[in-house]
Picture (cartoon, rainbow, N blue to C red):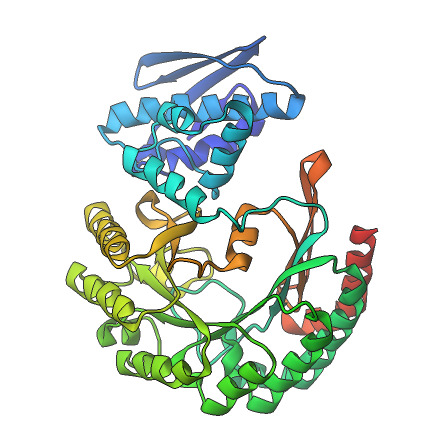
Length: 456
């Protein structure tokens, strides 16, 4: 439990408390004050008082508030780190985009490393951020009018036990498909006048390949008039048990440039434990099936899945590398509310997760992959991160734009969140669609109106 002299800070400080197992049982009091360029924090707990003073100039009220938050969290992190004799790989950073903080520091001072050192980020992770920034060169572009288009197809064969998304087994949701496709058609027609410089199109899920071949073709036909500039076009195909040569051919015919094969693991025991209805051999077969069509392929792995050993995870990394996809993303398990696995299993020990992450970094680097996007989530096991790795010149534009929030994201479908950037004002406005498919279908006209209003 924590009490702070500025109540608006308490949720932010609780994010730091959650980093340390057992800290939520402590009674902590924190006083935060700011005078000119001086930021002071005093923390009282366990009968002791800890005091911290930091100096930093700022140019706006928004920047001042950000610094108050930054130094309050840093003071609490240092206190708890000393109390628990534990240092965390990302130090006091709890935000989901460390790279954004790095870009802000570079804009202000020309360098981000001193800031990350001050925030107690490990040398290894500071170097990782530097590599990610290098990997984004030639893609990273903050420019008014840039836009990415996202199409949500929240349908899956089954629901994985770690999943907190709204997806339900296709057997339960297929009855909505005709109306859902009609709603997408309306949204996409209304979206066309809103699109400026289209950077990429991404069809995500769910598992888009769970659609029947004619249904998938219908979606791609809707998108054809919007993608006249030939930009990057990704379909998150998903699980290998949904693949057919016909679906791959349809994607090729409509100009898809990239597909995602979501392996998650190459351990049959793990796949069964998380609720998958396919084997590792099926994943490998999906790669072989896709090869003649010439797509760039993204492949996802998850570190920390239920009961998985280090050797099993190492085998997954080695197998993914042997299949030679354009991108390999290594996620750290993140159990949110709504994930069945959250109530059924314990998170793997921090040391084991750290070994998994270290192995993936070492092996992917040795295989010629470079990190090009990075993000974190709350409730992420071991306070680690998700990293996208790419072969040279194969980075996914959509992933960079979305993770760095440097372009408008025009999103259609259930549970789709549209983001409009106002770069000169330094702010983002959001417009979300209902998660529940029937509710989305009822409100699609209102959703269209809201997006048109957001675009002005």
